Length: 202
Image 1: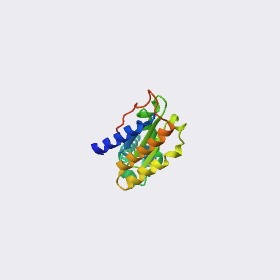
Image 2: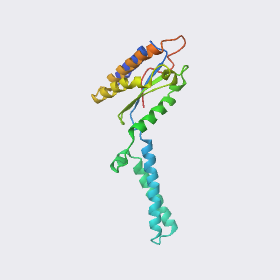
Image 3: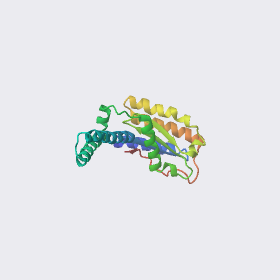
Image 4: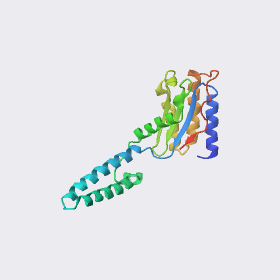
């Protein structure tokens, strides 16, 4: 994402927030949201090392040798498990919707969207590698706008991303979100502008 892209999104957020007391934050995750895959792969490596240790014990190998062989096998498998490319080659599949959803919830909390004065934070979360888009809103927004309202905005981003125009889709989604928020949560003195307008890429 270029500096001009960031500036376009930031300007769209600023314009949208000028018409509402809510806060809009755009987050773009560039790395795969696959922590769960690594955990599964590491657990599998541990079980395999234990199983191999059991087989080696039948060969008459001394206990020290079995332990060393298990440790070496686990270390090698753990190193392989750290590679998403290797996990895909071995058929360790991802659950992208779940992984991306968990990443979105973590980002929502980490970036302070759940700590605005009136709990009116809205986050547009894009997990690029997982090809997932989600809009997460705090309880103050849920009380005024039904969650299914955001389906249109999600589709805007997804369609634009498929066409290679992710930034255009994000800008359009911010504008549409802002229009919905302006009707449900109009500006109030002392509220708003609690979070940065620039997109957060991580």
